[in-house]
Length: 77
Image 1 (cartoon, rainbow, N blue to C red):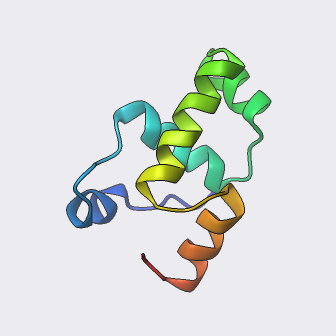
Image 2 (image 1 turned 60 degrees about the horizontal axis):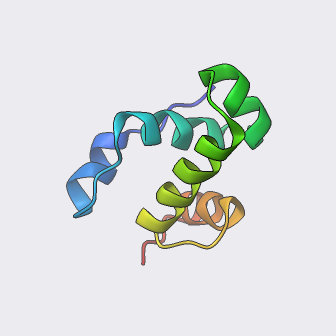
């Protein structure tokens, strides 16, 4: 499993990820579905969706696929 260095993101954005958003961000990058994230972190699906939406918003992307593409291609908006 590859870990992404969140401090780089934190330094470049006005709205840093919370600790929970960071956990969810890493799980999104691992390809985890909302149900898997909820089970692993012992959260409701509703709470996971809320945090996923926040992560996507902070990266200015519309989907987890766009988030992965942005990371792989090194593009930032």
